[in-house]
Image 1 (cartoon, rainbow, N blue to C red):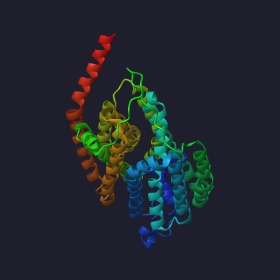
Image 2: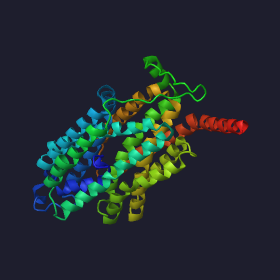
Image 3: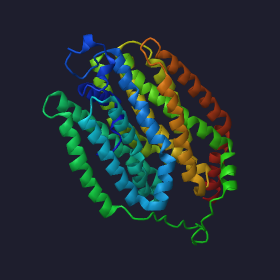
Image 4: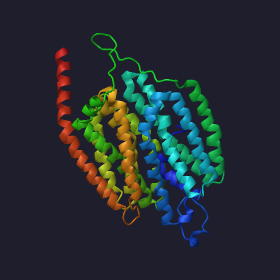
Length: 409
């Protein structure tokens, strides 16, 4: 909660950066007399700050494979501690040098880079409760959404003049992060111990398979895995475009911005709903439903009016909080656990590479509709792919399982 990706609540993060005069040098001198506030001085500053979101996402995702390997070798405890120290450096850079554009880019990059240093070791808790592993993963994912409330809170404190950006960053670096550093040293395991899986019939521990390149290539050759490996980066890039587009298209609507600041932190509600129906609804059906909602969001964001902006904010919140974890859950059902970690790392790395393209997209208000149309087309393609490659076999398997259960009873 306290060390999650604060940039998830991108609306509040943008306002915070405006208050700190980040990228103010992008504006002409005629804007220099305008005092810093929670809105942009000029469109160039708005676009420059908007481009910081892909920087954080790229750092978060491309580093995933490296962090997964690092955790296997040095263990969760050292991984978390290393991440907290680097995160402290990120806050200090933002606190000391908010007007230095290079320092801010490095700070945002480090904030994204260290997200999975903290998140991945936390997810290992699900290994010790295999029966409720999916639910535990959702709960841990939910906790990071509360970080959005903290970003909103610190933005309000700076806006009202109660504290400065420098003070906020010092408290994070030398109080909050050090407290969690102590907690990590005490409670995080030095080495990851994966519990043995017991065979239901023999009641004996199942032997662990060796990781082999042939086995990995075999797993990657599945049409289901290929579809997921292609969809995951498209989904992440499209969500990033949606978040950028929201503040660009509705930045002048205080109501929409206010709702969006609370929509993503409240995403834990949709997580709780999915958790409640997880045992009766397949992850694949949830992925398809969320994809349909995301297509709707890309269309609505191009419609003027507060109603469309508010609806888009809610749809972004639902899509971001649910879809990626459900892809993980679905992959668990079709993959050998020996290669699950490797392929999840591959998914995140591909997503990071896909978001690199966002840095070169013209997100000006006049052209912001183009990347959204492209995202709609890409999502529609994958909606067809899910229905063609996965759904028929999934329904058949589900019917067989139901029939087998009925025959046994």
